[in-house]
Image (tube, rainbow, N blue to C red; front, side):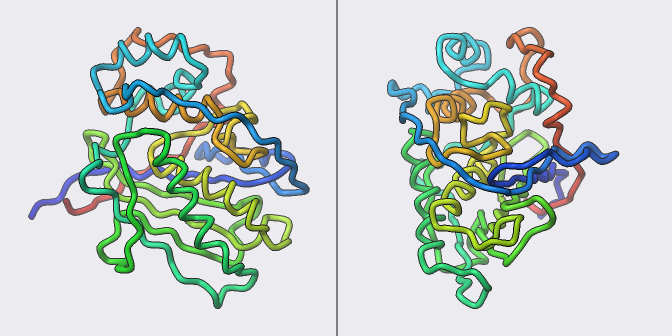
Amino acid sequence: MHHARSILLFSICALGFGQPSVLDAQGVEPAYSTVAARFAPLPRATLTDGTASRPDGDASAVALAASLENYLPEHLLVRDSVVRRWAERRGEPVRVWIQPARAIAGWDDSFGAMAEEALDTWSAVGLPVRFRVVRDSVAAEIHVVWTEKLGQDESGRTVWWSTSQGWITRARVTLSTHASDGFAQTPRALRAVALHEVGHAIGLGHTADARNIMAPWVEVTELSIADRNTAALLYRMPVGRVAAGSASVAEDDASGKQRAKRSRSTTRE
């Protein structure tokens, strides 16, 4: 047994409408308070030729991205041009434990099913990663846990760990039974937050476009074409730093608005 250095990504997410909070000195990405909620379903689409299962290089993925609706360049900008994701897990699905939480105030018996639906929806994108819900929390690689209320302006939070090479090895998704305004979450709203947080758990970052589930200010209830294509393209790329010049990234996207806080953590592999 040996110790390996790994990277811890901390992401703050929310559902609804509001004004962004002020960034602190550590560069935490902005969180948004929930004042109201409106949802406009978006069409479903994704790569259909199996390309998501062929990580044959960042150049080809970026070339393909140029012809598809996606936010891969924005994702790479926020991630400092580093790709982190799960290794292929078709034959051995990623084990997920969903915490039983009926004792938590604001609980709805449909919430567990909403979390499973979020996992199934991302699985249906065609990524080389599948999920399997297990009863043993110790054996699980992703923990979905519940709390009555998160910090100010938060409805969900995801933490994941990766190896120094960039392979994600485990994650923790926290979902709140109450929105940041104190009102209980509806099953529909909870599912939207779960979709967003599972997106983080598979390696996606935020996008500024509110038409996508991965916007930090969630206004939709389904994955967009861009959400699906970006995830598929991410899993076509090798992990690690993207070669210089392989992607054309616009600097005018105000990347400072979505800079994530990173810290170091030691895990056992």
